[in-house]
Image (cartoon, rainbow, N blue to C red; front, top):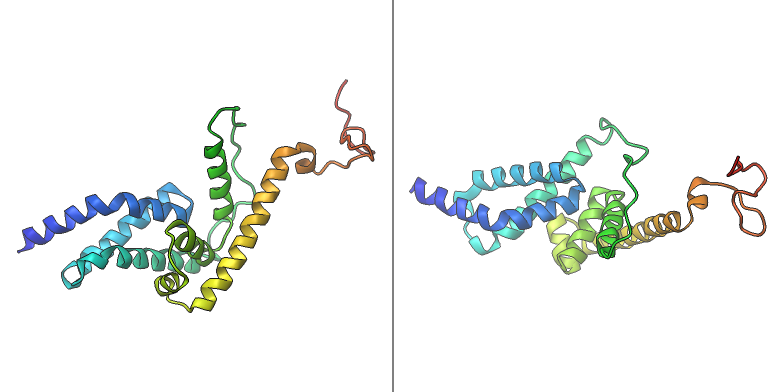
Length: 196
């Protein structure tokens, strides 16, 4: 009996792990944290495996466990975690035909700026294409709460993406350099001369 139990759970892990890992990454914005989150979710599932009757609904239960784990983690570490004020330096991307990859990175960076519940609402509503009611059920909240969190999260995402795109288009704006009336940042009063 125990061997059949382990075989069934092992088969479930092989099938579900990739999807769980992608969802965990969208929620945490960090692959290492996503791997830990998947592992903890699978441990919680293994503990309850014998009591789970409806095997066709395990995916939803696993996502609910994962959401609760990350929200609990973020809530308990809110005041004790180190907060970075700047991103680590990364090389400038070379121009290439993979513009979608850059767009995805910009979106992931903007998603990382959201709070855990807003990020969870956006991921469930738009990445997993769930209804408001399904999202509310997974988050353990009301539909109106999901709608308001989604609206606020989308507004934050739009503002963040606009700021990132503006910084990419005009480095002078990103550096905060003043402009002269003709739009030349280096000729403005107080700007550092560009040449010798």
